[in-house]
Length: 285
Image 1: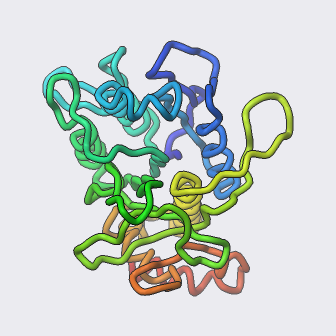
Image 2: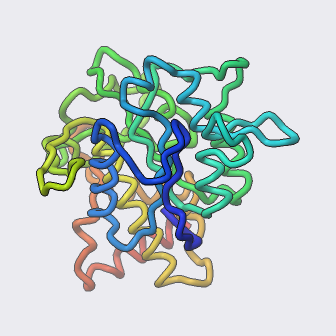
């Protein structure tokens, strides 16, 4: 989701498809949720796997497809073929995106084929190049309370998102709460209607951390867009950083259960509530 306009909104790092394609429908569903949550956002799509199974079956390759190798320093961001323009790098450096949504994950951080922590390096490089002003969101897990948070959701600069029902109660196969006692965030992720692949108007109903992550990223894009329109001189720029947006989340989320927060902007959609939103943005900045 964007800062700078461009006509090139798709890039395939798994294959070499010039026309957007989706073999299992997951990406299409997530994209439709982001579009619904932030209808005015400019969205760029990077394909890093053929199907969801490729993440577990080919962790080194798919994690490399989330990374880039610099000519001078071996920093990896998103890809395996064109090593000068790969996915996170493509999204951040070429298109200046504000928000990156990753409805994916691995049980632990996969290493590249030469042993590099390519995704962590990618996140660090992206933040460094944009003065820390990129927000990353990732799905926490769909393996239930016996599992821990996936990577990259457990990365310190990534917002880990969980699934809730429409009332904000954390439901479904969410991971166990972190042992450190920290607060966790979730949004709607149970029986969410989404778009499906093909030329029909068929609806695909999705549940889990993946749709919740897409919705949370879309809501974040909505907030960033609001700050750009209403405070164009940079007054609220700290909200574009991870610490700033985290503080904003603490203020606007509802506590549904102990340590569990529900992210929604429903209370700010009416114009007469905008002063309250401005107040929260001011404190977070």
